[in-house]
Image (cartoon, rainbow, N blue to C red; front, side, top):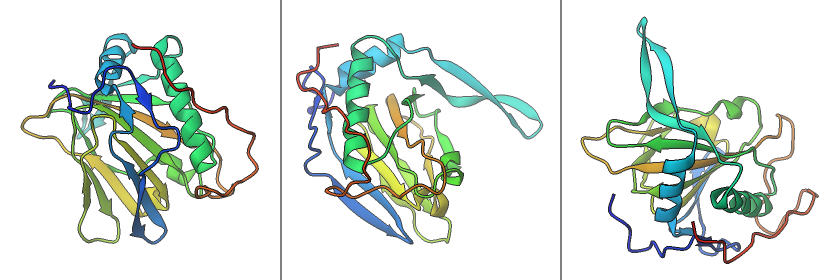
Amino acid sequence: MQASLFDTGCPDFDPEMQGIERIELGDGAWVDYLPHWLAGHDAVYRQLAGSADWKQGRRLMYYRTVDVPRLTAAAPTTGHCAALLLALSATLSRHYAVVFQDPTLAWYRDGRDGVAPHGDRIGRLCDDPVIAIVSVGAPRRFLLHPLAGGRSRMFSPGWGDLLVMGGSCQRSFLHSVPKRGHADPRISIQFRTMEPAGTKPPARRGQSHNLLPVERAPRGLPAL
């Protein structure tokens, strides 16, 4: 995998999330995008690739069981990566005024790995779930398909980019990572809200839902 020009070695990120852009998708759905939020992404990729407990899932397809075309893992709970992911989660929680589950990981090893259009199950459990994805490694196409029909929206997260789906996105859009003839590897670090349906929708920056205070994310995280 070729290292990005934006990879500075020591993992770090902006806790103020300056420069994040909101893209309104219609019908209450939105996406926030912040390129290169996580500096030092290549070191994070290597650490996660080598230390996470990766699993090969299996699923039933057309009366036969096949491998899921990607690896998945729970986020590490010890080590420098664990501290970094905790800091990222705290920053995202403060920004969106929601509580996130423990992060999960998906490893798209090459162009043969991908995921078909789907909506996360959390969309049936929460009124307006927030799903944040930090991508380390090379960019991959990430498509949002409107259920009502029309053109899909394309993003190419990688190299430490942050992509956040919110509002009605999990009910009115499907998202996918299409397979390709060639693609360099990418690991997706996923943070999902954990509130059940009926809770308050996520606040915009500057608003508050009276959550318990979240510890400010540390700067100068240790090198991996």
